[in-house]
Structure formats: C-alpha cells, structure tokens
Amino acid sequence: MRKTPDDFRATDPAGIARAWDMIEELWRDTVIRAKELPETALHEQVKGQWSFVQTQRHLVLATDCWLRRTVKGIEHPYHPWGIGGSWLTSPRRWGLDPDADPSLDEVLDVRRGRMDEVQAVIDGLSEAELNRTCSPPDTPGHPRTPHTVCECLGVVLNEEWHHHRYATRDLAVLEQQRQT
Image 1: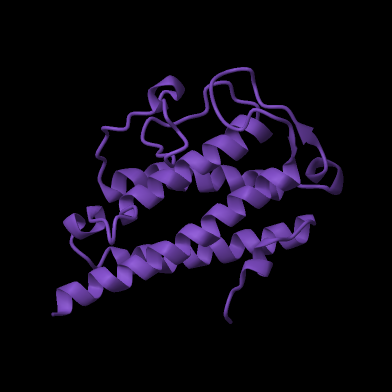
Image 2: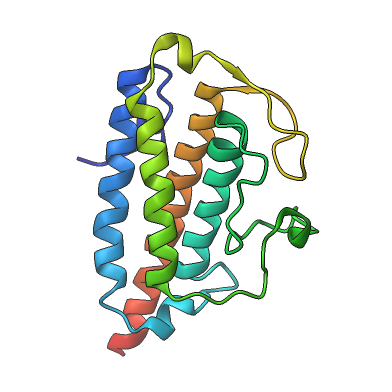
C-alpha cells in the first residue's frame, strides 16, 4: 500500500497510532536498505542535502523539540547529536554539538530511544490528552509557544514522513553510484 501525506495527518488517537506504525515500518525497511551500503556512503551528502546519518540526527532533534520539550516539558531535552536547519543559528546554546560525527549505529541507538518515547506517548493517548495544550519550558529551544499534543505529534509525523522521502531519494542515488 502506498503511503501519502494524508496518512500522517490524523487527529484522533487511533489514527495517530496507525500513522506512527507506518513510520516505524517505513524506517525499519529503509534502515535495512541503508545498512547494505558502506558506512562512509551514509555520511555522504547528495546534492548538498543532509546525509543519511545527518537525517537521523535531525529527526532526533525534531523529537526532542516537539515531544520531549513541548509535550513532556523537559527543560533540557536535546541530545548533543541533534541537527537543526539553517534557522538554528546557535546550536551550542541548546546543548547541541554541531561538530559531532557519530556512526549510523550510534545515532540509531539514540533514534530508537526517541521513537520508543513517541510510541509510549501514543500508547497513552486519549482524546483529552490529545487536546491538552502544552507550554514549553522557559529554556533555550524550540518551539517557544504553546501547542496541543495533537499539533506536536503532527509535526513529528510530518518531519518523519518528509525526511523519509528525502532519505530514500538520496539512498537511490548512493546505490546507483556504487553500481556504476
């Protein structure tokens, strides 16, 4: 079955659980595919875009921002390996290490922990929890304004969906380069 962005725009607990299951399945298969390439290839950028490893690091940051910081209210939620876009001009202020260069397996260990946290929140969702407004702590980070749990999970799902698409697009290029 082909997955579309609409599959990841659920606004009820059951729909969000289905969407997360799809995300888990997509990444499980893609990580298996990625591990067929040499580790060095997974650190290569394709046309200036994030490498596969950098994409995983970005998804750690997205979960840290929207789930750990906002939904869970953790004051210092960031793993040092997280990567933000160009909008993040002072990553060290958040406790991020832009010079870090972890291996895929190291990043995947962190990712698995973050994905398990998302699953635990989804497992405990009720309509009331989904509609709860969360105010992020008054510490450096993003977002700075209140959002509902539903909005936060929507951002996580959206980030996962889009970055999976980019990662698979770039994996195809890396695979093709190794065949020629």
